[in-house]
Length: 263
Image (tube, rainbow, N blue to C red):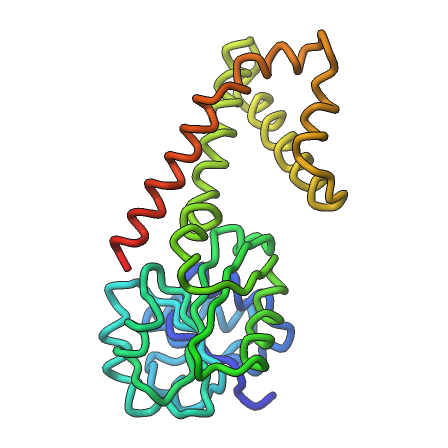
């Protein structure tokens, strides 16, 4: 068994998404109080589990804080005296700034804050990363390497995190809402629900995949599909109006404002 290198405070679905990206899972320890969940993780991934967050704090060098926001303070109270300057605490807790994390977990531990999204669970996540002054570049690179196994990463300033929360954090719900709208539109045109969803979902997936792999600019792509006098152009007459983009902008602004309030 490898020496313990990576730990988790919390073992929910997001933590599991990160776990899946770690190559050597024998060097992982996860704190989970629910016996059935702990047994499931051990059986499925071969990781060590414990009921006690203190055990994780005492053994892991890099620790992911993956608990509910309302549980953070109680975890911090238990582990704060144990954390050392050689350890890095990586928080994926929504709405908890570096300042709040510092207050809760103390001045010793190195801090990195991450804003992931749900696609992490499908190895296609988007994670924004910001580091406290005491975190070294090598610590940030390690976190990027781990999370990069479950999608894409970007290193930003913390001031950008409200926008990140609105765009990529909340984005999966907005993306699914668009898929729902397209599916419902297909049903109204006479398609069976399962067929309409498949057509909408695969089209959105395939388009995103093509744009990512090709690097093609968005406007030329749109114009290329919208041949003059064709079916796509007829549809775009309804969509390509200022009101549509304003609704999207207002949606993101509302989410960003709420993120700022929670922080």
